Length: 270
Image (cartoon, rainbow, N blue to C red):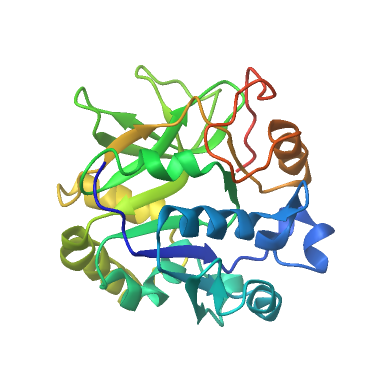
């Protein structure tokens, strides 16, 4: 197992409009799965692994998130970065706002709407450098996906995929849990984010930035397959119901939970 990054970034600024009416009164990262807010689950897993500082990019109902998570969480320091334009910007802009953290060394990067086991983070430590947590893309999934090369590297990102899209090669769903090495962040990701924002591309998503870097040959990402672990990306009320079913009867932040309640074809509502 490689060294554990001491820093993490969680992107948690969005409106969560597809989760209304739940998000009329709370931000999406504080929606609960069996009584545990999505964001608390992520923070607990990061702290349990040994991360010492997490930066949360906030926007919609930011005060709720700050009050809920505080300045420390399970002994881990919390830093907040505010996006004042979250209604009209994409996740890449949120990440650019956290560029000071991106330059502190190796990091974990998480989206604030993913409920997952701690084991998904430990899988990212099985390799050095840049790693993405992936699952096998099944017929009920949709959203961003990747194609892998023969040596397990991410060769290509594909956006807005569904089972109706033909592919001659196996697709893997991005879980939106990443680990990035310091050299990649300093030499490739931060400069690309700077260029993107300077050129007015503030509506882009992180996956689009990563796709461009891979296509240009400036980025290599190894794969960490998590098809035996529990996780779910919660974008809609239907997603929340599935997440509740997946984690039924289990403490959500425990590593290595069994797969008994996971649907054979796991839907994902990106």
